[in-house]
Each structure stands twice: as structure tokens, then as C-alpha cells.
Image 1 (cartoon, rainbow, N blue to C red):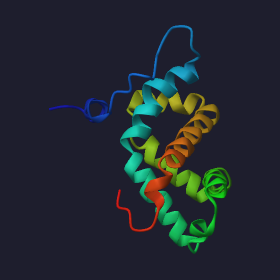
Image 2: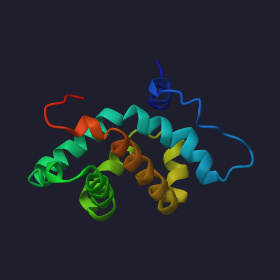
Image 3: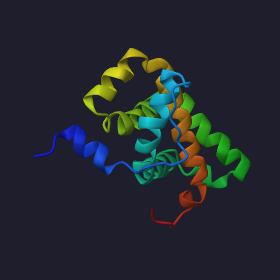
Image 4: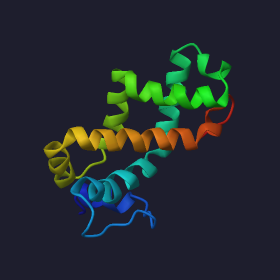
Length: 135
């Protein structure tokens, strides 16, 4: 029987552009080896969570220009602590035990990297946030 850690790693997508080498910092290594694949795996859930965020905030998002929508996404992720913690949980819940142990050693720097990845993911999927489009 496979362990939870093995199963988690098995379902992660590979990201050929996420290079890993000996010259990079521990945070960058963790970002490319762990955070990027998890963010990609959780992409649809992250987009749906943001769609729910829009609904809970009276659909103001849909009245904004594209430029202001990008800022709205960034602001929601940076300033709304409850929402931010929810997004972090969606990624942290996919960590192996060793990854979690690494994460808690430097959670502040890794949280910043994590939220930047989430912001980039949601912003790059901005077309999926339109009304009536299913993920």
C-alpha cells in the first residue's frame, strides 16, 4: 500500500520549466520542487475559490476594467487574511510530512512565494472568472 506522501507526489504534475539546481536558495528550490507543482495541481480549486470570493463580495469584480480586476485579485490575496489563509490551506494540505517540516522552518518567506504563485495563477486564468464559464 502506498503512503500518503507517495500518493501526493504521484498526482502532482511535472513542470519542465521549474528548474532545480545547486546554486538556488532553499526557498527557490522549495518553490520549484513543491509549490509550483501543487499550485498547478490545485489550479481549478484556486480559480473556483476566487470565483466564490467574487460572489461573496457582491460581484463588484465584474464591474471593473481588466487592469482593475488584476489589482482586485492582488488586493484580495494580500489584504483579506481569511481568504489568504484559506488559499494557503489549499496548498499546505498537499504537502508531504517532510515538505511540511521544511515549510515550518521558514514559513514567512515561503508564504510570500506561495501567495505570489497563487496570484499569478488566478491572474493568468482571469478569463475563467467570467460569469457562466465552468472550470
